[in-house]
Length: 456
Image (cartoon, rainbow, N blue to C red; front, side, top):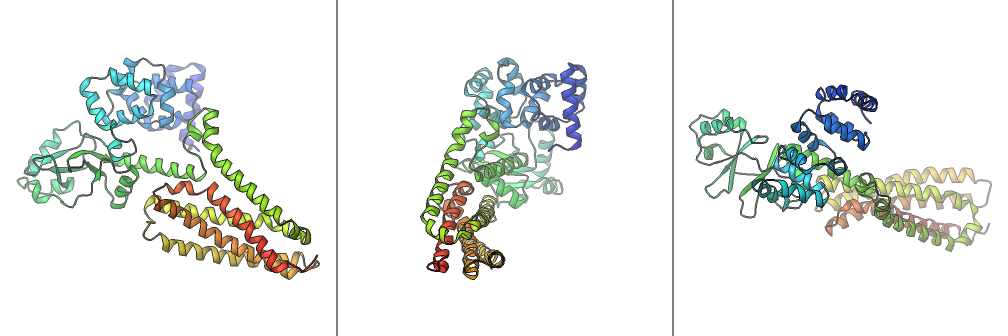
C-alpha cells in the first residue's frame, strides 16, 4: 500500500490528468522526487504513464525516471516512440543503466536503439551486454575510479576532485601496470594519510572481488555480509573491469526476494508483469497440474480405505485438520530453509544440522497438537464406540503428519540445493502435495493399527 504522501500524489496526478490540467501536473512533477514518481507510475494506466513521462521537465529527468521504474513498465511506456528521441534520453544514462534498459526492451526496439547510438557508445555498452544480465558482469558499472599503485595520496585526491564521470567513488581501486587489481583504499584512509605516501603503502591487499560470471545474488550477499558500498568486478586474469555499487545490490536483493517468494507459490514474475492471459496460464498450469495429480492420488488413497471409514465414520471428520496441520508445518519449514539458503544463513555444509532442528520442532509441535486433538476426539465421541482408540488414532496421526512434514519441508530444499537447482521451486505445490499424500497414508495406517477389527 502507498503511504499517505504518495497516495495524495497519486490522487492529485490522476485528477489533474483527467481534467487535462497538464500545466498544473507539470508543476507538480517539478516539485516531486523522481523516486516517488516511479512508485506512483505503477498505479497509473498506460495513457497517464505516458503523459507523466512527457510532462517531465527535460531528458535528464526522463533518463533518471527510467532507471527507477519497474522493469515490466518500460516496454509499454516506450513502445511506439520515436527512436531518435529515445536515444537522446538513453545517452544521458550511465552505461550499466543503459544495459539494464536494453535488456528489458523487446528485441526489435533494443536493436533499433543500439543501431542509433554512436559506435563508441555501442562498444562500451556491448561490453556489459555480452554478460548474463543476472551476473556481476551484467549489473556492473564501468565508471569506476582506479589508479596505479605508485600514485601518491595527494595525487589521488587531486584526481578524484577532477573526476566528473565516476559513479559513487566510495573506494580508490589500485591497479598494477597490467591493469590487475592489487588493492583498495577507502576515502577515509586517503584523506588522513600524508600526501606523499604511495597508495601501495596504505592499500588493503586482501580484496573482496567478484568474477564477471559470479551470480548477482552472491555479489549482493558478499556486499551485505561485509558491509561494503561497492564490489570490484574482475575478469579471468584479475583485470579490473567494473564495480557493483550499493544501489545495484539493493535492487538485486529485492529482485531475488521477490523471485523466491513467487517461486514458492509455483509462479514467476510474469504473474503480475504479463498482461497475456495465455502466458499466465502456461506459466501456472504445470504447477497446478502437479497439485491436481497429488490431490487425485490422495483421493484414491482415501478411497482405498473406504472400509475403515464405513466402520468408524468419525475418522472423516479429522482428515482436514490432519492434512492442514501437516501442510502448514511443511510450508513453514520449507520457507525457512529456502530463505536461509538464499541469504546464506544456511549453507549446504550446515544444512543437515538445521534439518535435525526442524524435525525436532515438528515432533514437539506434533506432540502438543496431537495431545490437544486426542483429548478433543475422546471428549467429543465419548458416547460412541471406542473413543480411546479414536483419540490415539488422531493424536498420533497429527504427531506423525507434522513430524514428517517438517522433515520433508527441510529435506527437499537441501536436496535441490545440492543438485544445483533453485530451492525456491521446492516449496508450495511440491512440498504440500507430498505432505498431503504422506499425511493421508499415515492417518489410515494409524486407524488400521488402533481401530482394525474393533467393529462399529
